[in-house]
Amino acid sequence: MLKIKTAFFRFLFHYLCWWLVWILLCTVVLHRLNIEWTLAFADAVVTNTLLALAGFGIFNTNKVYAPRRGNYIYSAGIILVLSLVVMILSKSILGCSGLISNADYQAVLEASMPFRFVFSLLMISCISLLSGIRHFSKQQEENLIRKEEAERLLREAELSKLRQQLQPHFLFNSLNSISALAGTQPGEARKMIQQLSDFLRGTLKKDEQQLVTLEEEMNHLQLYLEIEKVRFGHRLLTEINLVEHCKKMMLPSLLLQPVVENAIKFGLYDTIGEVTVSIEAKEENGMLSITVKNPFDPQTSGKNPGTGFGLSSVQKRLYLLYARKDLLETVPSGNIYITTIRIPQIK
Amino acid sequence: MIKALLIDDEPLARSIIREYLQSFTNITVVQECSDGFEGVKAVNVHQPDLIFLDVQMPKINGFEMLELLDQKPSVIFTTAFDEYALKAFEAHAVDYLLKPFSQERFDIAIKKWLEKGSTPATTDLLSSVPLKQPEEQNRVVVKSGSAIRIIPATEIIYIESYDDYVKIFTADDVYLKKKTMNYFEETLSTSSFLRVHRSIILRLDTILRIEPYEKTSHIAILKNGSKVPLSRSGYSRLKEVLGL
Image (cartoon, rainbow over all chains, first blue to last red; front, side):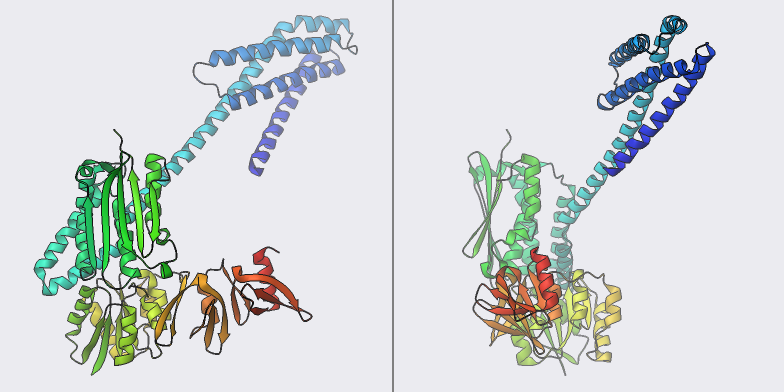
């Protein structure tokens, strides 16, 4: 705000200086035309003040309604009208003012009218043009900043997308399991490498905007679950129940994985012993409704395990895609934490 | 014979340590544990010389488990999380192995420990892993009798220093824990806890009112009726936080 203010005052200062120079110049020219100093000066002040006001007006109009291709005629019209107004006003002020009753001067004033009109026209056009250039370059600068900002945001989004998908802990722990299997069960190690590769490939090639069928999404999720079962097979059980016709319904790709990951994390780290994570899908009022359940401990997790992990990103994606905030729902029910996602189907 | 204990919730992660240990014939694995509760019991039963400890485990994590031990054996952390290195260093870990680790890296950790005994390898540790500030703690794990209790920070009313220990007051009990006041001042959320006295850390929303006490000092009266002293600087900090 302060910066804008100082910039404005600097502009005002330059503008006033510019008109002072013209006032002096005009005074000298008028004096040369045999008009006495005081009259010449008064004339120059009145004319140039009016021009300064007109110029300031056009400068500010240009700021709000930047001249664009097609409305040059409109701008030219404004300049013409302003010049006429300046001419008439200056004449009436100088002519009617009781102070100036010099007959010679009146004659010069009358004779110089066309010249004054052209002078005003040129002056206002010049200001209009300068202000246009100024606004244009400012706009260019702003566009550049905006573009850079947008690019930065895009890059950040890309990075966070990668981070989200590539869960480094999951990856390193899986690699550690493979390392363990390589020594004793090379066959199993090879199988797990295959699953991990397929999973990573599936994660990398998918686009966040893309819609996939529930069947495709579940196939991808299955790979993830298989890997988690190698790590936690002794504790982790999964139950998957999909209503047959829902398999062809669509949902944003990779939406379920963070939800299931969250469920597994909470199930495994919040309880001791066997953990059953269940995934159900059904149709509800024309929407695809997916429910993920996991055990948790309301005592130690507080009321809402969803806040710490990836559910907020799911919420955000759903909002960006469908502009609705009610599509993700989390409800603790006793020792079971229930996460429900509803996906509107676009026909 | 050197007694070692493996504590990790993933069976495969334990099996690889067991495999790597085969080349050290003087080290024997006395037990494998899959969570911190088992770990505490096993440490008390076997009194191991060395434990291999995972960080993220069910219910209580590796650090919380260590806090529950009276006799602390040497610890080598094994984890996929690199952000706990500073904490591991503070817990006087021998080494910090990032999963997956090689036999060579594992051997270095063991040999270092064998040579130096239980002296922590501080400088190596600090240089090999990126450091992060300790994270905010939203729960405290304590031992009460033979049971282990996890107290959510929201249930703590205040903490009072008590020699080398602190007393943790909750609505229904008082727990002892061997930690410093500074530790809690640093790790508990600063938006809900405040050190109001050299020996008191108070949860702000338990305060019912503040009253003058004697001539110059103040006390806070809590919702459960207890009264805690406020030091002069503690009182001014409290006024600032509460916006008085």
